[in-house]
Image (tube, rainbow, N blue to C red; front, side, top):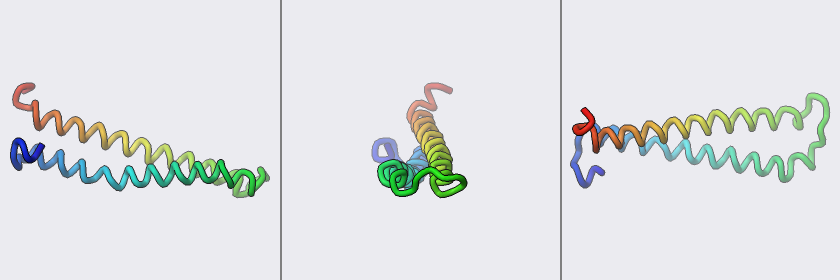
Amino acid sequence: LAGLVGPLPKVQTHQHYGQMLLPWVIALFLVAAAQWLWFRRGVQRYPATRGGIATVAPVLLAAASIVVGLGTLILVVVIGDTGARAVWGSLLG
């Protein structure tokens, strides 16, 4: 987009948000991999006991997946919105 329309402030904002997405996607991948590992190996290694790691780990992984998933989703929506406004802003008013 910046190559087509030049370094306009709205395009630079869109580009800035786009660069912010990479850490969120990496975090989303890491949380998903941790969940996969837990349910693949952790459940077998740590049987369900009262108050142990078998109780805490799934809750923490679920909370982390919700936070990272929502953060990624919100950032993707903001990136799309700023990109659309940079391209179509003058036509939409």
